[in-house]
Length: 404
Image 1: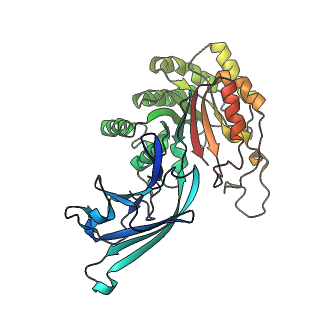
Image 2: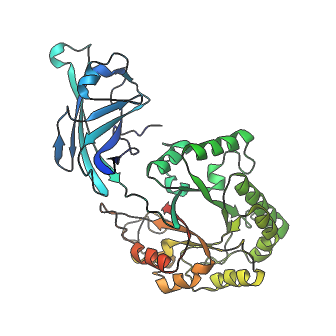
Protein backbone atom coordinates (compact mmCIF):
# COMPACT_ATOMS: atom_id res chain seq x y z
CA UNK A 1 0.00 0.00 0.00
CA UNK A 2 1.19 3.52 -0.76
CA UNK A 3 1.35 6.32 1.79
CA UNK A 4 -1.47 8.84 1.53
CA UNK A 5 1.03 11.70 1.18
CA UNK A 6 2.59 12.22 -2.25
CA UNK A 7 6.08 12.02 -0.69
CA UNK A 8 6.50 8.43 0.44
CA UNK A 9 8.13 7.48 3.75
CA UNK A 10 10.14 4.69 2.16
CA UNK A 11 12.93 5.41 -0.31
CA UNK A 12 14.39 8.62 1.15
CA UNK A 13 18.17 8.07 1.12
CA UNK A 14 21.56 9.17 -0.10
CA UNK A 15 22.93 7.42 -3.18
CA UNK A 16 26.50 6.23 -3.64
CA UNK A 17 28.71 5.81 -6.68
CA UNK A 18 32.34 4.64 -6.62
CA UNK A 19 32.51 5.15 -2.88
CA UNK A 20 31.16 8.71 -2.96
CA UNK A 21 27.74 10.12 -2.11
CA UNK A 22 26.56 11.82 -5.30
CA UNK A 23 22.98 12.77 -4.45
CA UNK A 24 19.78 11.78 -2.74
CA UNK A 25 16.56 10.01 -3.69
CA UNK A 26 12.93 9.91 -2.67
CA UNK A 27 9.77 8.22 -3.92
CA UNK A 28 6.49 9.80 -4.98
CA UNK A 29 3.08 8.40 -5.66
CA UNK A 30 1.19 9.76 -8.65
CA UNK A 31 -0.63 12.89 -7.38
CA UNK A 32 -3.20 12.77 -10.16
CA UNK A 33 -6.45 10.78 -10.11
CA UNK A 34 -5.32 8.65 -13.08
CA UNK A 35 -2.18 7.25 -14.67
CA UNK A 36 -0.64 8.90 -17.71
CA UNK A 37 2.20 8.70 -20.21
CA UNK A 38 5.67 9.53 -18.97
CA UNK A 39 5.98 12.05 -21.79
CA UNK A 40 3.33 14.16 -20.03
CA UNK A 41 5.62 14.70 -17.04
CA UNK A 42 7.05 18.19 -17.31
CA UNK A 43 9.54 18.37 -14.44
CA UNK A 44 9.75 18.56 -10.66
CA UNK A 45 11.06 21.48 -8.65
CA UNK A 46 12.70 20.40 -5.40
CA UNK A 47 13.52 22.54 -2.36
CA UNK A 48 15.37 20.69 0.38
CA UNK A 49 16.12 22.61 3.59
CA UNK A 50 15.81 25.83 1.58
CA UNK A 51 18.14 24.71 -1.23
CA UNK A 52 16.37 24.83 -4.60
CA UNK A 53 16.85 22.51 -7.57
CA UNK A 54 15.20 23.60 -10.82
CA UNK A 55 12.55 21.36 -12.34
CA UNK A 56 14.81 20.07 -15.13
CA UNK A 57 17.62 18.87 -12.80
CA UNK A 58 16.25 15.73 -11.08
CA UNK A 59 16.21 12.32 -12.77
CA UNK A 60 13.06 10.20 -12.96
CA UNK A 61 12.96 6.41 -12.50
CA UNK A 62 9.77 4.68 -13.63
CA UNK A 63 9.26 0.94 -14.11
CA UNK A 64 12.95 0.32 -13.44
CA UNK A 65 14.23 2.76 -16.07
CA UNK A 66 15.88 6.12 -15.37
CA UNK A 67 15.37 9.21 -17.52
CA UNK A 68 16.43 12.82 -17.71
CA UNK A 69 13.48 15.15 -18.16
CA UNK A 70 14.23 15.55 -21.88
CA UNK A 71 14.41 11.77 -22.34
CA UNK A 72 11.14 11.36 -20.51
CA UNK A 73 9.40 13.96 -22.66
CA UNK A 74 10.30 11.92 -25.74
CA UNK A 75 9.64 8.43 -24.31
CA UNK A 76 6.84 6.55 -26.06
CA UNK A 77 6.73 3.37 -23.96
CA UNK A 78 6.67 4.45 -20.32
CA UNK A 79 3.77 5.34 -18.05
CA UNK A 80 3.27 6.45 -14.44
CA UNK A 81 0.40 4.42 -13.04
CA UNK A 82 -1.60 5.13 -9.90
CA UNK A 83 -0.35 2.10 -7.99
CA UNK A 84 3.40 2.55 -8.48
CA UNK A 85 5.90 5.09 -7.28
CA UNK A 86 8.33 7.23 -9.20
CA UNK A 87 11.86 7.56 -7.82
CA UNK A 88 13.36 11.04 -8.00
CA UNK A 89 17.16 11.37 -7.95
CA UNK A 90 18.62 14.78 -7.16
CA UNK A 91 22.35 15.23 -7.90
CA UNK A 92 24.13 16.72 -4.87
CA UNK A 93 27.78 15.93 -4.14
CA UNK A 94 28.03 14.77 -0.53
CA UNK A 95 24.29 14.18 -0.31
CA UNK A 96 22.32 14.99 2.83
CA UNK A 97 23.46 14.78 6.44
CA UNK A 98 21.98 12.24 8.83
CA UNK A 99 18.78 13.61 10.35
CA UNK A 100 15.41 15.09 9.45
CA UNK A 101 15.01 17.22 6.32
CA UNK A 102 12.23 19.53 5.09
CA UNK A 103 11.19 18.91 1.51
CA UNK A 104 9.00 21.05 -0.76
CA UNK A 105 7.96 19.77 -4.16
CA UNK A 106 6.21 21.06 -7.24
CA UNK A 107 5.45 18.36 -9.80
CA UNK A 108 4.47 19.59 -13.26
CA UNK A 109 2.30 17.53 -15.58
CA UNK A 110 0.67 18.32 -18.91
CA UNK A 111 -3.03 17.51 -19.16
CA UNK A 112 -3.89 17.06 -22.80
CA UNK A 113 -7.60 17.53 -22.12
CA UNK A 114 -6.95 21.06 -20.82
CA UNK A 115 -6.57 24.03 -23.20
CA UNK A 116 -2.87 24.36 -24.18
CA UNK A 117 -2.41 27.65 -22.30
CA UNK A 118 -3.26 25.97 -18.96
CA UNK A 119 -2.32 22.34 -19.66
CA UNK A 120 0.89 22.49 -17.54
CA UNK A 121 -0.56 21.84 -14.09
CA UNK A 122 1.46 22.13 -10.86
CA UNK A 123 1.01 19.65 -7.99
CA UNK A 124 2.56 21.02 -4.80
CA UNK A 125 3.48 18.96 -1.78
CA UNK A 126 5.48 19.24 1.44
CA UNK A 127 6.93 16.63 3.71
CA UNK A 128 9.83 15.48 5.83
CA UNK A 129 12.41 12.84 5.10
CA UNK A 130 14.88 11.12 7.39
CA UNK A 131 18.39 10.15 6.38
CA UNK A 132 19.53 7.20 8.47
CA UNK A 133 23.25 6.62 9.01
CA UNK A 134 24.97 3.55 7.64
CA UNK A 135 24.71 0.57 9.97
CA UNK A 136 28.17 -0.20 11.42
CA UNK A 137 29.61 -3.70 11.41
CA UNK A 138 29.24 -4.89 14.99
CA UNK A 139 28.34 -7.78 17.26
CA UNK A 140 25.45 -5.57 18.36
CA UNK A 141 22.83 -5.97 15.64
CA UNK A 142 19.84 -3.76 14.94
CA UNK A 143 16.24 -4.81 14.46
CA UNK A 144 12.70 -3.48 14.80
CA UNK A 145 9.64 -4.76 16.64
CA UNK A 146 6.32 -4.82 14.81
CA UNK A 147 4.92 -3.26 17.99
CA UNK A 148 6.31 0.00 16.60
CA UNK A 149 3.67 -0.11 13.85
CA UNK A 150 0.67 -0.83 16.07
CA UNK A 151 -1.32 2.20 14.90
CA UNK A 152 -0.71 1.57 11.20
CA UNK A 153 -0.45 -2.18 10.64
CA UNK A 154 -3.62 -3.67 9.11
CA UNK A 155 -5.10 -0.16 8.75
CA UNK A 156 -2.71 1.89 6.62
CA UNK A 157 -0.06 -0.78 6.09
CA UNK A 158 -0.07 -4.45 5.24
CA UNK A 159 2.23 -6.83 7.09
CA UNK A 160 4.46 -6.85 4.01
CA UNK A 161 4.54 -3.03 4.05
CA UNK A 162 5.94 -3.22 7.58
CA UNK A 163 8.68 -5.62 6.49
CA UNK A 164 9.42 -3.43 3.48
CA UNK A 165 9.71 -0.43 5.80
CA UNK A 166 12.20 -2.26 8.00
CA UNK A 167 14.30 -3.22 4.99
CA UNK A 168 14.17 0.36 3.71
CA UNK A 169 15.85 1.77 6.83
CA UNK A 170 18.51 -0.93 6.67
CA UNK A 171 17.84 -2.98 9.78
CA UNK A 172 18.55 -6.70 9.83
CA UNK A 173 16.12 -8.15 12.38
CA UNK A 174 12.36 -8.42 12.83
CA UNK A 175 10.65 -9.02 16.18
CA UNK A 176 6.95 -9.90 16.09
CA UNK A 177 3.98 -10.18 18.43
CA UNK A 178 2.78 -13.71 17.88
CA UNK A 179 -0.90 -13.20 18.59
CA UNK A 180 -0.98 -9.81 16.85
CA UNK A 181 0.86 -10.66 13.64
CA UNK A 182 0.24 -14.31 12.80
CA UNK A 183 -2.91 -14.96 10.85
CA UNK A 184 -4.77 -17.90 12.35
CA UNK A 185 -2.64 -17.90 15.53
CA UNK A 186 -1.80 -20.26 17.16
CA UNK A 187 -2.34 -22.53 14.16
CA UNK A 188 -1.35 -20.60 11.01
CA UNK A 189 -1.90 -22.29 7.68
CA UNK A 190 1.00 -23.76 5.73
CA UNK A 191 0.36 -21.08 3.10
CA UNK A 192 0.82 -18.32 5.70
CA UNK A 193 4.05 -19.90 6.97
CA UNK A 194 5.38 -20.32 3.44
CA UNK A 195 4.58 -16.68 2.66
CA UNK A 196 6.31 -15.59 5.89
CA UNK A 197 9.54 -17.33 4.87
CA UNK A 198 9.23 -15.91 1.35
CA UNK A 199 8.94 -12.35 2.71
CA UNK A 200 11.82 -12.91 5.14
CA UNK A 201 14.00 -13.90 2.21
CA UNK A 202 12.69 -11.12 -0.05
CA UNK A 203 13.48 -8.35 2.43
CA UNK A 204 16.63 -10.01 3.83
CA UNK A 205 15.39 -9.95 7.42
CA UNK A 206 16.35 -12.23 10.30
CA UNK A 207 13.60 -13.37 12.72
CA UNK A 208 14.78 -12.37 16.20
CA UNK A 209 12.28 -12.52 19.05
CA UNK A 210 8.77 -13.97 19.21
CA UNK A 211 6.57 -12.18 21.76
CA UNK A 212 4.23 -14.62 23.48
CA UNK A 213 1.55 -14.32 26.17
CA UNK A 214 0.79 -16.94 28.80
CA UNK A 215 -2.46 -15.53 30.16
CA UNK A 216 -2.70 -17.53 33.37
CA UNK A 217 -5.57 -15.28 34.48
CA UNK A 218 -7.51 -15.52 31.22
CA UNK A 219 -10.58 -16.89 33.03
CA UNK A 220 -12.47 -14.69 35.47
CA UNK A 221 -13.14 -17.40 38.03
CA UNK A 222 -10.01 -19.55 37.96
CA UNK A 223 -6.33 -19.60 37.13
CA UNK A 224 -4.88 -21.82 34.45
CA UNK A 225 -3.42 -25.04 35.71
CA UNK A 226 0.32 -25.51 35.32
CA UNK A 227 -0.40 -28.05 32.59
CA UNK A 228 -2.61 -25.62 30.65
CA UNK A 229 -0.08 -22.79 30.93
CA UNK A 230 2.80 -25.04 29.95
CA UNK A 231 0.89 -26.20 26.88
CA UNK A 232 0.54 -22.58 25.72
CA UNK A 233 4.25 -21.90 26.10
CA UNK A 234 5.23 -25.16 24.42
CA UNK A 235 3.01 -24.43 21.44
CA UNK A 236 4.53 -20.96 21.06
CA UNK A 237 8.08 -22.34 21.31
CA UNK A 238 7.33 -24.79 18.52
CA UNK A 239 5.73 -22.04 16.41
CA UNK A 240 8.66 -19.67 17.02
CA UNK A 241 11.01 -22.41 15.80
CA UNK A 242 8.83 -23.06 12.76
CA UNK A 243 9.13 -19.39 11.80
CA UNK A 244 12.88 -19.21 12.37
CA UNK A 245 13.08 -17.22 15.63
CA UNK A 246 15.91 -17.62 18.13
CA UNK A 247 14.11 -16.38 21.26
CA UNK A 248 10.66 -16.11 22.78
CA UNK A 249 9.37 -13.66 25.37
CA UNK A 250 6.56 -15.19 27.43
CA UNK A 251 4.49 -12.50 29.19
CA UNK A 252 2.88 -14.11 32.22
CA UNK A 253 -0.08 -12.56 34.02
CA UNK A 254 1.12 -10.33 36.87
CA UNK A 255 -0.02 -10.04 40.46
CA UNK A 256 1.27 -6.66 41.66
CA UNK A 257 2.19 -3.09 40.70
CA UNK A 258 5.78 -4.31 40.61
CA UNK A 259 4.80 -6.72 37.82
CA UNK A 260 5.48 -9.79 39.91
CA UNK A 261 4.74 -12.68 37.53
CA UNK A 262 2.29 -15.49 38.12
CA UNK A 263 3.88 -17.44 41.03
CA UNK A 264 4.06 -20.74 39.13
CA UNK A 265 6.15 -19.29 36.29
CA UNK A 266 9.19 -21.31 37.37
CA UNK A 267 7.33 -24.60 37.08
CA UNK A 268 5.95 -23.66 33.66
CA UNK A 269 9.32 -22.54 32.30
CA UNK A 270 11.20 -25.50 33.74
CA UNK A 271 8.75 -27.89 32.08
CA UNK A 272 9.47 -26.07 28.79
CA UNK A 273 13.28 -26.09 28.90
CA UNK A 274 13.65 -29.42 27.08
CA UNK A 275 11.57 -28.13 24.17
CA UNK A 276 13.55 -24.87 24.16
CA UNK A 277 16.77 -26.90 23.96
CA UNK A 278 15.35 -29.15 21.23
CA UNK A 279 14.44 -26.15 19.06
CA UNK A 280 17.37 -23.97 20.18
CA UNK A 281 15.06 -21.25 21.49
CA UNK A 282 15.99 -18.89 24.32
CA UNK A 283 13.14 -18.13 26.76
CA UNK A 284 13.46 -14.48 27.82
CA UNK A 285 11.33 -12.91 30.55
CA UNK A 286 11.11 -9.15 30.16
CA UNK A 287 12.50 -6.56 32.58
CA UNK A 288 10.03 -3.73 32.04
CA UNK A 289 9.17 -0.54 33.91
CA UNK A 290 8.07 -0.19 36.70
CA UNK A 291 10.33 -3.10 37.65
CA UNK A 292 14.00 -2.06 37.99
CA UNK A 293 16.95 -4.41 37.67
CA UNK A 294 17.53 -4.43 41.42
CA UNK A 295 14.26 -6.15 42.31
CA UNK A 296 13.14 -9.50 43.78
CA UNK A 297 11.52 -10.47 40.46
CA UNK A 298 14.83 -10.12 38.62
CA UNK A 299 16.65 -11.87 41.45
CA UNK A 300 14.23 -14.76 40.96
CA UNK A 301 15.05 -14.93 37.24
CA UNK A 302 18.79 -14.92 37.90
CA UNK A 303 18.45 -17.55 40.63
CA UNK A 304 16.55 -19.72 38.15
CA UNK A 305 19.38 -19.36 35.62
CA UNK A 306 21.96 -20.27 38.23
CA UNK A 307 19.93 -23.19 39.59
CA UNK A 308 19.04 -24.84 36.28
CA UNK A 309 22.33 -24.02 34.52
CA UNK A 310 20.21 -23.77 31.39
CA UNK A 311 21.48 -21.94 28.31
CA UNK A 312 17.86 -21.55 27.19
CA UNK A 313 16.62 -19.11 29.81
CA UNK A 314 18.04 -15.58 29.85
CA UNK A 315 16.88 -12.00 30.39
CA UNK A 316 15.30 -9.48 28.06
CA UNK A 317 15.69 -5.81 28.96
CA UNK A 318 13.28 -3.08 27.89
CA UNK A 319 15.21 0.21 27.82
CA UNK A 320 12.23 2.10 29.18
CA UNK A 321 13.70 1.32 32.61
CA UNK A 322 16.53 3.77 31.86
CA UNK A 323 14.23 6.75 31.20
CA UNK A 324 15.45 9.95 32.84
CA UNK A 325 12.58 12.18 31.71
CA UNK A 326 8.85 11.34 31.59
CA UNK A 327 6.85 10.99 28.41
CA UNK A 328 3.10 11.59 28.72
CA UNK A 329 2.32 9.49 25.69
CA UNK A 330 -1.40 8.93 26.16
CA UNK A 331 -1.24 5.87 28.40
CA UNK A 332 -3.92 5.31 31.02
CA UNK A 333 -3.65 7.85 33.80
CA UNK A 334 -2.30 10.73 31.71
CA UNK A 335 -5.21 11.33 29.35
CA UNK A 336 -6.19 14.66 30.91
CA UNK A 337 -3.89 17.63 30.68
CA UNK A 338 -2.36 18.42 34.06
CA UNK A 339 -3.47 15.16 35.61
CA UNK A 340 -0.91 13.68 38.00
CA UNK A 341 1.13 10.87 36.52
CA UNK A 342 0.73 7.54 38.37
CA UNK A 343 3.75 6.49 40.41
CA UNK A 344 4.36 3.46 38.21
CA UNK A 345 4.87 5.75 35.20
CA UNK A 346 7.58 7.87 36.78
CA UNK A 347 11.04 7.44 35.17
CA UNK A 348 13.11 4.78 36.91
CA UNK A 349 16.48 6.09 35.71
CA UNK A 350 18.09 2.71 36.38
CA UNK A 351 21.87 3.28 36.61
CA UNK A 352 24.24 1.83 34.02
CA UNK A 353 26.10 -0.04 36.77
CA UNK A 354 22.99 -2.19 37.27
CA UNK A 355 22.86 -2.95 33.54
CA UNK A 356 26.54 -3.92 33.54
CA UNK A 357 25.91 -6.44 36.34
CA UNK A 358 23.26 -8.39 34.41
CA UNK A 359 24.73 -8.27 30.88
CA UNK A 360 26.08 -11.82 31.22
CA UNK A 361 22.49 -13.02 31.74
CA UNK A 362 20.96 -10.81 29.01
CA UNK A 363 20.10 -12.22 25.58
CA UNK A 364 17.87 -9.58 23.98
CA UNK A 365 17.20 -5.85 24.36
CA UNK A 366 13.98 -4.11 23.38
CA UNK A 367 15.13 -0.60 22.49
CA UNK A 368 12.12 1.35 23.73
CA UNK A 369 11.83 4.97 22.60
CA UNK A 370 9.17 7.67 22.79
CA UNK A 371 10.25 11.01 21.35
CA UNK A 372 13.12 11.77 18.96
CA UNK A 373 14.01 15.32 17.91
CA UNK A 374 15.03 16.45 14.41
CA UNK A 375 18.68 15.79 15.22
CA UNK A 376 17.74 12.20 16.10
CA UNK A 377 18.37 12.71 19.81
CA UNK A 378 16.23 10.72 22.22
CA UNK A 379 14.52 13.05 24.70
CA UNK A 380 14.00 10.47 27.45
CA UNK A 381 16.49 7.62 27.19
CA UNK A 382 20.30 8.03 27.52
CA UNK A 383 21.41 6.00 24.52
CA UNK A 384 25.06 7.05 24.54
CA UNK A 385 25.46 5.67 28.06
CA UNK A 386 23.57 2.48 27.21
CA UNK A 387 25.62 1.77 24.10
CA UNK A 388 28.89 2.53 25.90
CA UNK A 389 27.90 0.08 28.65
CA UNK A 390 27.12 -2.65 26.11
CA UNK A 391 30.42 -2.12 24.31
CA UNK A 392 32.45 -2.04 27.53
CA UNK A 393 30.71 -5.24 28.63
CA UNK A 394 31.46 -6.91 25.27
CA UNK A 395 27.75 -7.65 24.91
CA UNK A 396 26.57 -9.35 21.72
CA UNK A 397 22.98 -9.53 20.56
CA UNK A 398 20.00 -7.70 19.15
CA UNK A 399 18.76 -4.19 19.86
CA UNK A 400 15.15 -4.23 18.70
CA UNK A 401 13.62 -0.76 18.29
CA UNK A 402 10.21 -0.48 19.94
CA UNK A 403 8.35 2.79 19.44
CA UNK A 404 5.92 3.35 22.30
